[in-house]
Length: 64
Image 1 (tube, rainbow, N blue to C red):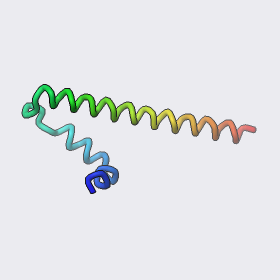
Image 2: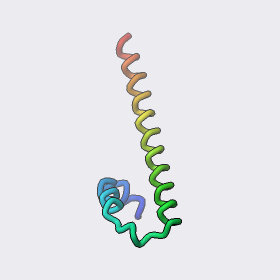
Image 3: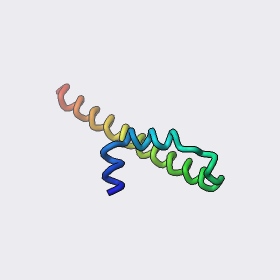
């Protein structure tokens, strides 16, 4: 259920994270948060690259 909500409104999830009070988190929690965000950034980069590869393949196909 939580995963479904996040998929339906990713901008709301990001807005929540951006407003969260970081002063209540421990150093360990902050490092874990950074790691999770870095993993998500990498996942987004891979999705962008995959879409670019798909578009390049389609462009080549239609240029024939």
